[in-house]
Image 1 (tube, rainbow, N blue to C red):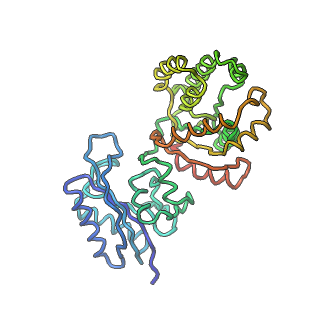
Image 2: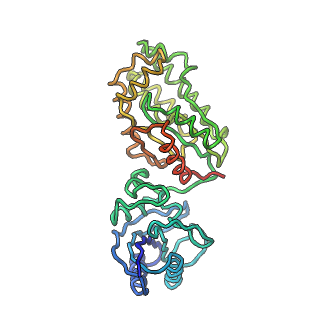
Image 3: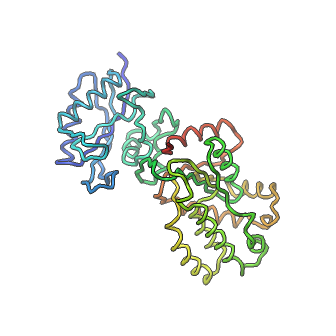
Length: 360
């Protein structure tokens, strides 16, 4: 009889947490037609909810089984019940939690079971364990390896929140294709697109022409324009909206274009207004090389951009890499040499985005 490789997430935050995990593994081993192959390192994590709950212990297990996914799932529920699991709500503390994460490459959507686990790609505590067991294991829907999915989270754990605007922010260098991708996504999702106010900034062309006395005016123009665009009261909760910029990019350009006195004043304004803007629920970082970006800049022939040099683009790119390296606000999908005009590539991205949004 053929056997399927499956992966189970284990978690406990009540009582002797390590003992509950150990007992659940032992009960799995005692299950006919189930072989526990490997266990990841047990790690301590914060609860997903905002409630005042004890810390969790989590790990992942790789098993081989001849059971069907449904029968395995029912066995997991029985083990939970045997070990005193109380089902007091979605975010309630529990003696043991056993989630069927993956069952081979099967995709299951029944009344009782969803596989892959519908939010496993948002949980570092799940993906870290899976990476330890098999980093090149592929998510059968997202078609990405678990180490790639884990890299999008920067060790963070996230939940889908329909109570906030579903803001997708496109980050990347000048000429990386942010505006083009924004237009494509807005059309696909039939949603609002918000664009950076390049054409209405009265100071920008003069700054690019070398008038650095106006650099602060230009940065403040962008800052307050974006503050108005990303006011949470003007964005609909639970509905997608796409911007061709990441608000926090302000810091990158300010540090590159302002002198010491200008930067100090700018930082005062930034610290006041930045907490009031809507946070993205997803960032897409276009990591196109500076040479490619410079070619696109020259092709689109915006007069004020023609003085831009590769060294400036390299500095901007480094600023994005540094700023997003430890980003904890939301997941970051990083795309290298992404071609917005390749329909197959864009369609693949759109399919993935749906799993990072809580659209009503």
